[in-house]
Length: 162
Ligand code: FES
Image 1 (cartoon, rainbow, N blue to C red):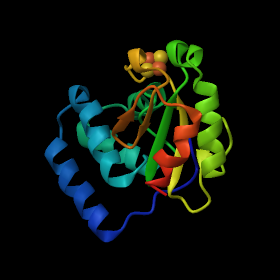
Image 2 (tube, protein in one colour):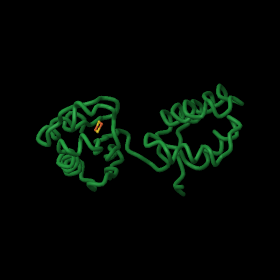
Image 3 (cartoon, helix red, strand yellow):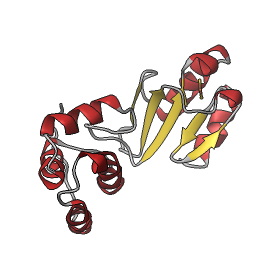
Image 4 (cartoon, rainbow, N blue to C red):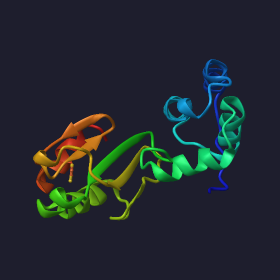
């Protein structure tokens, strides 16, 4: 668990409060959608917001943390405003994903194991299967997928974003 604290703007705070009011007492069946919705506003989930979600839904706090730890798409530490996810699962690995990861890391100036740019704009994440194995190697920039990616395409793909 991170010790960093989430800093929300006033509009973000209001949006989270409104959202949580809709999830009040809904129970564990609504935990995943609630986490998705809150993270869509806040970018990541700190200890305080997890406690608030736990209280709102009437779900044990430990369960909230377990779900966040289990699913790769939830973050318990700060991430960039934009996400670059490169799959390195088997099909993508065999199709050369490591070269794509290296090209992304070089372009963004972050570690090849992933990381966030110094300006907080981008996070590179080396990711388990993204469900597009037939298009390996596959990456996503935010919600936009790109298949059969070659390392020499990375500058252009990220250049449009950066
Ligand atoms: S192994 Fe890369 S998308 Fe499935």
